[in-house]
Length: 227
Image 1: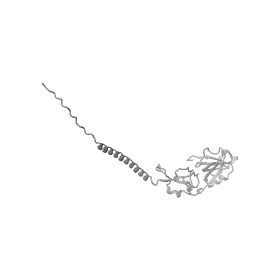
Image 2: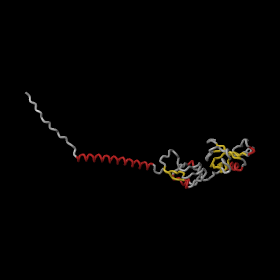
Image 3: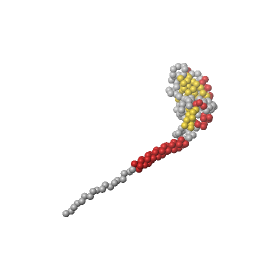
């Protein structure tokens, strides 16, 4: 005969973290979060300082006002701007401001446009050996959209020689037609009639005198870049 005796199972106590230990663990986690945030903030500040130093002194000249081609550049026409990435452009540094003021604009300068050496011409205007004249052009005798900087052939055709061939550049042939090659300085609306233009041109001094004194109607033929 066997006797089975059931022994009471004594539960093994499980250690529970104390409130102080839980509090300390929470404090450590909080410190890690704060430390991580400080490291991120420090990285941002360091990057900003490095970027600022890398771009220090990168100040260039820009047009503060619109300047027409051939106009003398005044001090109020120029402003200093900061450019982080010049993208290969040959810009004029801010310390060259005194060298730009008093010179002429080779092309029209728009407000805010960055200045390059190619846009700034000599102090003397017009250049030596050249002259500036203004000619009235009747409707239909100039290309549509003609603007400053364009190269044109100037033809002054007396009424009696309409339809005849023009002579060589800067001369007048037996037909009396005056011809010259010029650069457009400005184009304005004419006062005589609707659609007429007043075109200011830069061309050789001898050709300018011949064209300006020739009687007849002016026609302008626009040339291409290599014309």
